[in-house]
Length: 120
Image (cartoon, rainbow, N blue to C red; front, side):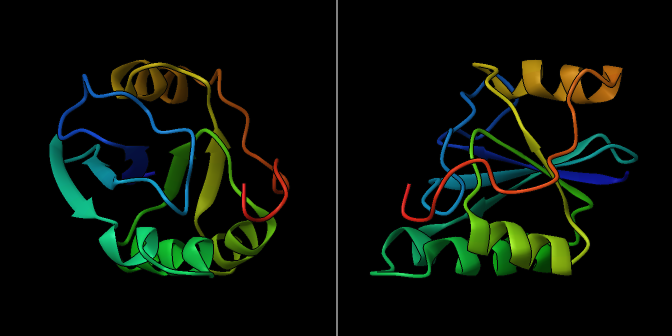
């Protein structure tokens, strides 16, 4: 795993993890090898009348991430992420840094399916 995307409303590892995937404000992409952060605005998906999860999945996949850590992921977004080879991890951590440590330590389980219905 090289790059991990986190759903958030902030711009650093101390920011809160956003429980929503498709309508998260930003994606924080953490590069494990470079120890660097990239912030991707999810404005296009947030303002979508429908299909926010699929659009967000495309944004995350284009960023070249191997994994996504989020609170919840719906069925259409989960299928799109899986098709793009992005592993999904659901996490209820309050901060991104906590979620990152949980992922690194192996305490997060990879999701095998969506954990909420669409339009969550």
